[in-house]
Image (cartoon, rainbow, N blue to C red):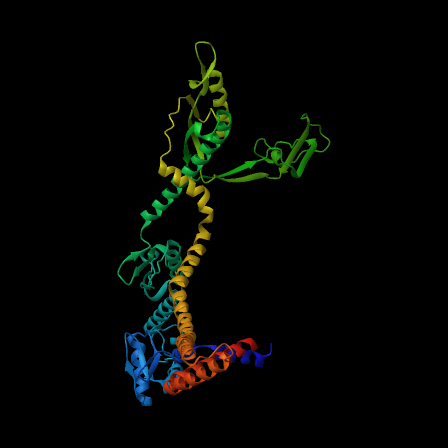
Length: 567
């Protein structure tokens, strides 16, 4: 795009504007530029922090301990300061960044909580008791910092009670902990977040149980102790599950039966289901009798020979003499046999762990009511009329419908399920006018609701255009037309006066001609020109200012017309 041509066109357009239009355009430009300058200045002023008469915020939301240390540092540096609202320190704007670096080098603000950095400085003369206290302070500070990092927590303080160690296990007292939290505005701790805080504290301290951690808000309200509320939530979830399950069964029945009866509005179904929400875990071990042989051992022993001779007799030398060789013994030979079999089998067992589902159906009862048939009645002559008569369903038809319902809900006789199908004449009340309107709105207008938002916005813009912009433009155009029409009125006024003069001149000329006896050969145009010229001289001399304004208006109109043609 040629910017030179663009600027020239803008300049020509500006020249064609009237004085009022130029004033409005200039004022609009000044307002827009001023607004942009204000935004830039406001952004630059707030980028460095809020300012209070030459002072800017050094730190905010400080606790008293950190505030005291920062004030001491500012007094040492000789920097003036002011205390604004709670926990806010102001310093001169030119010293903000310098003092922030100086204060940060001291390790503050620390939020008043010491962590394990407390052990960075070694105290050689510290006793064991002092070391235990330092450890307690360190772990409390670290836990408080960790809890403060959570989203809904603004500030936290942790207190841990460590009991004395005992050599007797039965006398050992478990530790306890208390947590004081300040919740951010508009936030709320839910059950999972409370359990998370308890687990953080309990997992950080040895032998600390989850139930020994207490949480209290800054308002003094204990949280996490509402076990009854937890049970109520569980009961509410079970009731919701039961209702949704029953509703799904009812819809299945209505969808199935409605197709045969003649519509969903001719079927009503109510289902009641008894659930068992108790959870059961079963653990069983099954041993296989037909096991595989792992090892087998057979031991067989055989022995054959004479029995040992019994030693005995009378005392004396003869008894001490051994048996003589070669002498026969009357005892028979000994025969010994032993057989041992040992078989080892593999131990084969099957471990089965079974966990029941969330809810088990114990019993289902269903009650279904259906409408009957409507047939045209006959008159005395046997012809059908337009009057409809109610005809109940037969027993066979009701049995078929009952069978369909049983198949739909998964009827189980052993479970004690019951199904009842009844036939009654439905008395459908006519819909009220409001219900018809609601039905029409929900059916046809609900999908168009997102478009209505844009339509309303367009209507508002149109009303604003008609009530504000259009009258302003009409007023501006009216002023322009009045400015352009003033010279035309002056021209018309002069022409009317000239015509009056000519009429008077004609009447005077006729009178003079009659007195002088001048005939038709007299040059009327020359006389008319001379008289008109004299009259114009008189008018110019008498109304010199008006004639000058008239000429200026004519020149201006000619120049405007020529510039529009060029544009």
